[in-house]
Image (cartoon, rainbow, N blue to C red; front, top):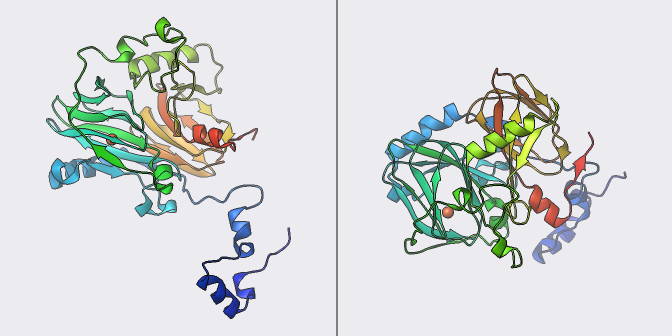
Length: 347
Ligand SMILES: [Fe+2]
């Protein structure tokens, strides 16, 4: 691979002429834009420990009333990408949100898609499109782009959940915005996860020959996901990742368009080496403790901790506990697949 000319090789007058005309020579930046073999990555493999986040989130509850915050969130920002950019990885926004008894987030809609993954507390709820969904630890709740949603807390004590959004992508496209509206009219019936989509493989007959609903199921209860992982583990060889993806039950497609969501189980003492992928990811610990080796960086993780995995990273995850460990994975594989450059590598 030959050396390319640098900016300094060019006469100053010529460079100034380019600048005056809003022009940039490609060749001095070509290798940085298209590195050979593997992308250059600024995302740091790193862990955010919940023991560092929780006290500061509770303090935010005292320092900033909800009217002054609207969303009381501490964002997990990867220093490799610049803290001010609020990116856990280049495409994944992760926030930890505190909601106190009686607080609400009024009805609104926005262009980025979001999911909530409940970390602690009882009594929180999210309503989407008139469907009121309880929020229990480990539940995944979808608030897709363009659907009206509101949050509230009818219980006691703090409720904390993890927000995962495709905000970095939508923001980079200068397409991120929000609207506020009147409170929803809530349908007086349990949510779809408890009524219409109770079992995988069974969908309402009446909808079979109609255009598919992009978001038929908006709540994935943890008790069902956990039981499904344990069942899969019973027929899976040790060392093979026991992992289930959250999908649209009517199409089998990832449940959201940009980010993908899945849950992983590791048996006691088990080590897994997930296949290397071109997508970036964030792993959030639901239960258990252990280590992860991400591109040679060793990370320690425990319950409710969260760690970042850059694109193309070599990953090894170990559960060093005596009980099964469970992790929630967010990745940008659905977007990479749609854009046509998603890859999986043998090693
Ligand atoms: Fe929202």
